[in-house]
Image 1 (cartoon, helix red, strand yellow):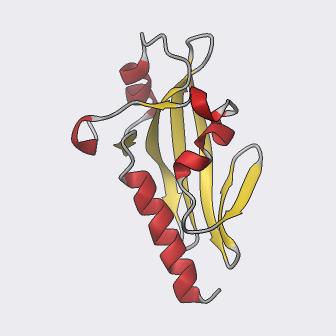
Image 2: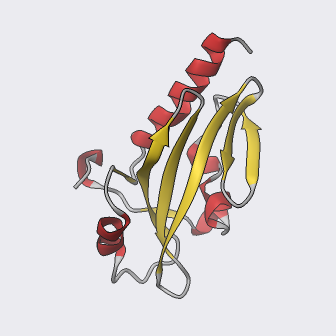
Image 3: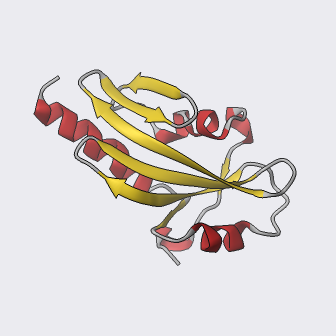
Length: 128
């Protein structure tokens, strides 16, 4: 894959994340936790920005309600290589094509079944 295709894959997956209904933007873990606190819905989640972005890697957090109703913050990295995009956290997954969605892998990042994941839909997809 050429550098141009690498850049296109990187842009597509990162734009998909930042336009996701669960996207909360660049907020602290404490603020994300306050939003989810009190919900009794395991695997209800928010997506938020991590600390860095490089040309081929961007990090994020998925903040979610665990089965015991505590709030978890799981970091993950989206990396783009000539083969496609990958996610990395405790395990790695990929490569995925540009047609693959973050919704196809979010359950792997949270270590649950796909049907258990529920995005917390944020009004107008804007950070608080």
